[in-house]
Image 1 (tube, rainbow, N blue to C red):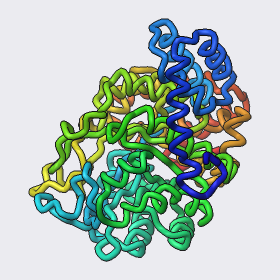
Image 2: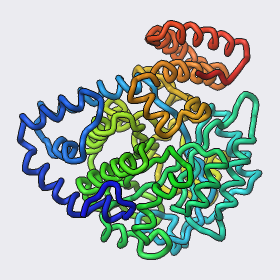
Image 3: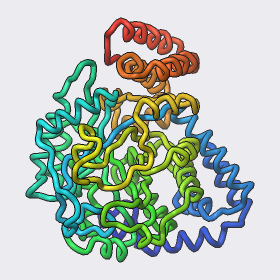
Length: 471
């Protein structure tokens, strides 16, 4: 029986509730009066229920779809303005004991080169990332308690925070590692991580178990309940997501929203981020074996409805997506993107590895400078800000500020200051010219005059060589 506050995975992700929701949505897909009421509610910026979101997902009226996309863009700009947070993944190890059928890291894959970075190699990778201008990383590893124990991850975090090259530094390390214990989550919290990220892959239990036939990840309940343990361990910023294409998108879309509601109802704060990756080609993986893969148009629709449903949650896409696809979903909801990503172990210091260690193909291969300039030409502000995390504005404290609208006063200024740092230290002349105009335009949009004046003062000090100002 469905119970959003239960700590039992099969109760807060209840199969019957998902199926009933899908049936309800199908029955009301042409109910224009209901859909208009749902959109009116979404326009109040307080979100939607999973059933309301499912009805929008079923809607196929061109006129109503246009309204959904227009409103999603309005909601996104109301909450996030023009800011787009930049990050990069850093793959530490691809050793793995699981047998996931969609991932080339699976244990029995003998084609892939196995590698674990040493601490010296991690330093070299971090220097390369800092020299691009990155300030925020997402650490990635396979699951292998022998070759990649929690102690190795903790040591790596310490190493990363300790690298200071020229004006570069990594100010926020997010972690995407396998489900673990409350004790280990406490250790990660003490190590100063930002967001703990874990993708569910699919919420459909039989499919989940089929796709994970062997290894610790086979345990559906242990994996699905990981965010509860993380929050019990003191981590208040968590990120969830599914890999669209592994199972029917309607099911996983509703499951994702049930998970978000569970975290809100149980812990008082929903997910800090939701990621929306799609199944991609990779070594030893044929996407033709996954008939549930979704189209670009459906992907855009999912992102837009997520933005209406969970307006204060960051939505992340990676370089799995093409330039064109990224541009479309940026309009309707995405607020964080990766740039110049390498999905291989050691990929930042060696462009063409002698032996491939990649987890998936990268579709958007542009350098960070080109991505930053592109964002500016689209009217966005590339943000390298990590101020909320370092100022203790996390979890329910961040959500309270976001829902009240107060967070916008500091976020806009912090985005512009960190973007100015990037322009001063790393940008090409072409990007710097475009970026300076972006800053001038966006400074004028800061609503609080005192904050605007202080931001202008800090930006002048950045030109003089000072760094790391924040509100």
